Image 1 (spheres, one colour):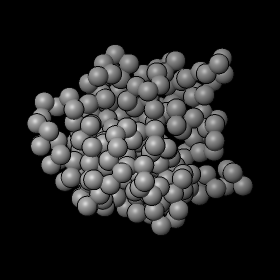
Image 2: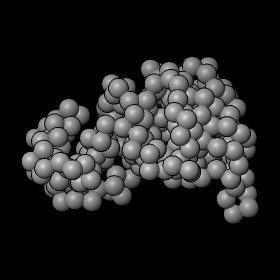
Image 3: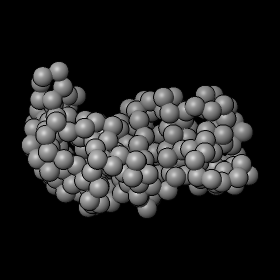
Image 4: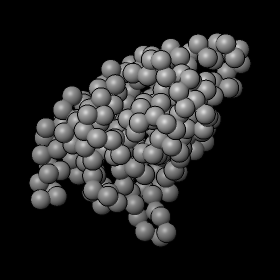
Amino acid sequence: MIEFEAVGHDYGGHPVLDHVDLRLAEQRVAFVGANGSGKSTLARMVNGLVHPTRGRVLVDGVDPVRDGRTVRRRVGFVFTHPDSQIVMPTAGEDVAFSLRKQGLSKRERQRRAAEVLARHGLDGYAEHPAHQLSGGQKQLLALCSMLVLEPDVLVCDEPTTLLDLRNKRHFVEVLEGLPQQVVLVTHDLDLLDRFDRVVVLDGGKVVADDAPAPALAHYRELIG
């Protein structure tokens, strides 16, 4: 359960979010809205990347501001630009690097890395130079580097922005098959048909919160 309780956030003296109240229990939730609507700010509060100016966020009752370490062990985050998350020379090393604090042997880290890569479309790429992967493969690699930690929640902030349509669909299909609760920030409305819930933000406020079809109809009417 992710809860936003009367959450507000100001940036440079200007309100970005205003009194957001949400309880997210569904497995697949999307945040949509125009640029500047506050959707990415809201998503980044889930694991404490951004702190509320007012109100609070809870992840299964734990406040990311008060106990960020506990929350970050349970919440994985995938950014728009995968290159910002890729830190090691090869795909396998990059995923294994996420396990560096787990007290595992090098062989076990390598085994787990290869396993998660194979499970999510990168079988045979463990030795491949990470920065020579395609855009879609890099985004899958960033995802694998989070999933190897087995988080309870996965937050993805516009991860399909740089991908072509084929890779966008593949990435979202991977998300749909995960056991984790997924919170997806996106502009790609056509990819959300099988999501459980869509939250529409405008001007820092929640203006629609429903199943995909009615929520997206409201958003399309809003933007004309």
